[in-house]
Image (tube, rainbow, N blue to C red; front, side):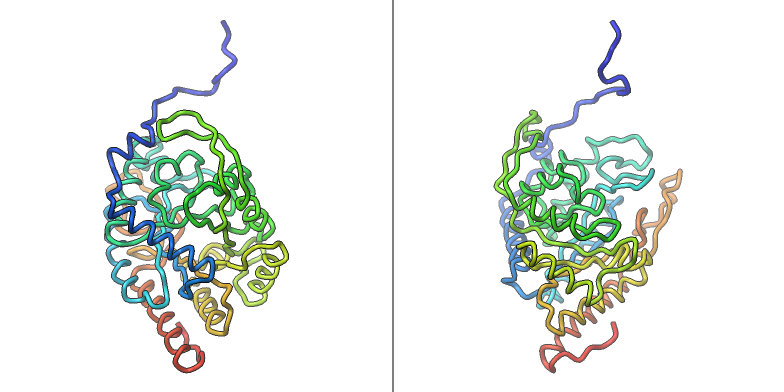
Length: 359
């Protein structure tokens, strides 16, 4: 008999269920209490009840758990030092949307060789998220595959929907049921309406198909997510973090009946894809906050142990430690310097009325 189904499927492998992996890498009661506290701080900032800035800081993508832990330990010390002005969430991105071909992230390809050991990838990612949480840092992830949140949703304190998926109804439905605040990036073209519509859509109730903790196909019915917010990341025509663009974005949020809260991504098109320009974007963010823009709730900064980026070599032993394999990042010394200086500017603004210095 001729087959009409799965004609291009090479093989199907069983994946461990969310419950099975959670039993291998469980959250302690202390972890849960910390995560709930982290989420409250994030939500309070988005809602305007906490005047600190939400700082999403970390590697473009994580490929080496050892380097990620070292980075988290450093970031925790810096977070404690700057906690008066910043609530720092470590950027822990495990899935990478690709415009063309390329490595798709630690979850989908943990061995970075195209073998696609997804079961291993999920386990490594979940364990790493728990380890970072136990250091005392909240974690934030980009949600790409609609199944993955069942494996890690309980650990996240913040999440994002990327520029390429903001228009996706699947991701809007998913966001409406996530347990955390969700930032929607404007489209790669720079258009804001896709993200505006996504925030509105995710705020409403939704029904969608997913898998349960036991791996069963299930219908999920959501209450809606009222902690959606806009992320400005620039577009094809250039950056959109300047004062006029930010004011236009706030006006658009207001016209659409949405909370006037936004975050500015210091990388991507806002930095014109030059990682060394991130400090310029951050300088503008702090400038605007100092001069009274309370609608800016935070910023994103791509940072790693060491600056720059590298291609994935055939021999993985040749990978340079602490260097991104996706977008180029600023190194740790620069990260520490610009965040400390930004905090210092906010200190002086409170004391002397807002005289700015160069980062």
